[in-house]
Amino acid sequence: MREFAYARPASLADAAAAFAAGGEAAFIAGGHTLLPAMKSRLRMPDTLIDLSALSGLGGVTREGDRLWIGALTTHAAVAADATVHAALPGLARLALQIGDPQVRNRGTLGGVLANNDPAADYPAAALALDATIETDRGAHAADDYFQGMFTTALADGEIVTRVGFRIAARAAYAKFRHPASRYALVGVFVAQHDDGVRVAVTGAGAGVFRWAEAEAALAGEFSAAAVKGLVLDAADLNSDIHAGAEYRAHLAGVMLAQAVGEA
Image 1 (tube, rainbow, N blue to C red):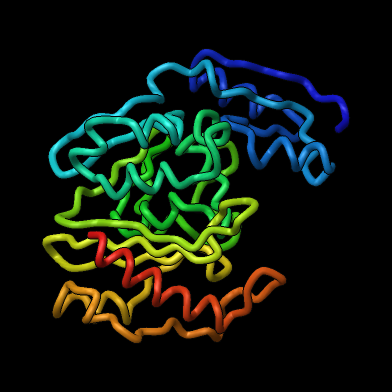
Image 2: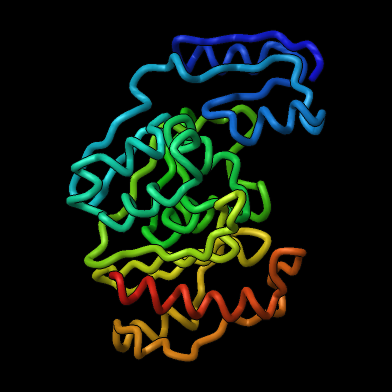
């Protein structure tokens, strides 16, 4: 890891100014992806901008049909929050499945969504729950936000401030975890809304995506029987030392049935 300047701004304006000051800058929240990348010299920012001192970017509130969670809210806080349990218990259970206690007590919702790891859990929840990702510059609908592996609609220097998840009538998440990293080999989030069903898959491909065939099957009957035997198309799925594309395609069907049953 080479030398870098360190900034800990107290406001969004100061954070934006630090980012624009020159050279390569990087924001850090929990740091679970950025710090290992810096240690291996895959990322070498000139300035590291710590967002942890920013006020107003934490906590949970319910406003109408949306559950708003601040970007700096940790996974552990989401998992334990009474408002989350009351409005979207499936989201609380998702947060509890992330990593281990050390990761859950340091990692943040905003950091995960800004990083958009193809095997992360929150992107599936954001897509299935029709989330709105608010930033210091505006807002993005989840359908437009996720744009492939580690790629989002965020402009350079744009900071996620809070996320509004649409409250569903029923929702749940199921994942098959890698035993070491606890990332999803395949994770499926299912949400039944008044205007239809949304199903999002993470871990299987180059990024999170909606599963149209599963949504159509559940629109007619929201039950595990309605998706029995449904297998994801393996054509564009990941294949690596951990699992082949066909295995991931099969797992998606298994996780889908589990999520529907839990919901």
